[in-house]
Picture 1 (cartoon, helix red, strand yellow):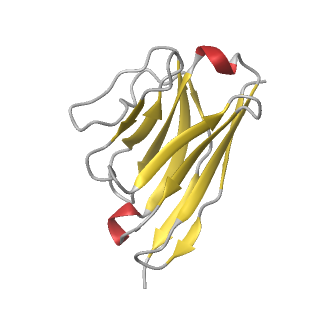
Picture 2 (tube, one colour):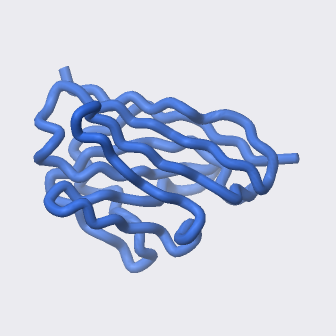
Picture 3 (cartoon, rainbow, N blue to C red):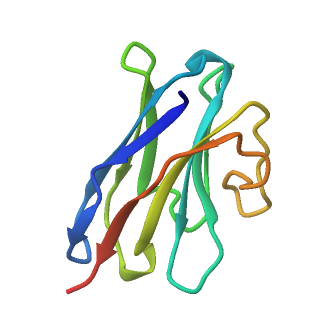
Length: 128
């Protein structure tokens, strides 16, 4: 059974940090690029960051570049998203997705279309 399980979300004050984790199972992890997406209430899901399977190239939505860092541990089949200097606009449910063919939008983040597998998400709330 294919699974992507996110964890690490929660409530944080503006300026704070969180680290999200996405653990993959049930498919060949080395063959897929892994991305992070987020969906705020009433808004479309948007691609935040991605790490390419072939060479580890990383991609970031322009709104998070310089604040978020994506990384992966192949041995643990886990992708991380370190989020620093969070602000209320970062609030939403964060999902990880696995893509055989990674495509990047003009905003710099991954395209949600073409995601083969989705996790169920972990909520992030940034407020004072």
